[in-house]
Length: 117
Length: 113
Image (cartoon, rainbow over all chains, first blue to last red; front, side, top):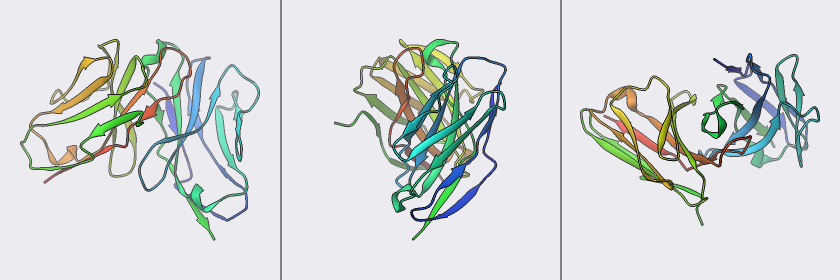
């Protein structure tokens, strides 16, 4: 079974600065997908970024980028120019490629990101 | 238009009762899921349905039963509610194989007293 580990229960960053959230995972599969989801106080789960394991290029979405190290099984999220609206719980998630689209996501325990004004 | 909707958003009930949570998606997706988020914010997959067939059941007690009347709906029935069932339950949907994202509903906060 796959596991996802987020070792930082809470992180704090000054507004406009850069912060990196860590995620490691354990799997024996070679093809899979990795995600970062954001959950603000409204509790809505919002996809931040997605990475396919077969792609060497790191995914980016505006101020959000990842550092995907497949050999190290590491998938960190970098948030540049932090904004107050970035304050939320961030979850790293894994999904198997095999089994088609019916596989559920395996989540880490989350990192609570605090933005200091 | 709301992509994935759940009703109710809040549900307070007593131990031993039976309750249902409804989920509907208007995205045309063929796979739907139920997740449970506990008091420590940990999210875990409970079920998924693909083309009206149960695909995953992650050691969830049989008091929980998903029912899908059609591809756009996946309801969660819970019998004989227990205090430990208190949590936020999320419905999600996705389309087919591959890395398509799962779209989540707003969640239902269930409180069992």
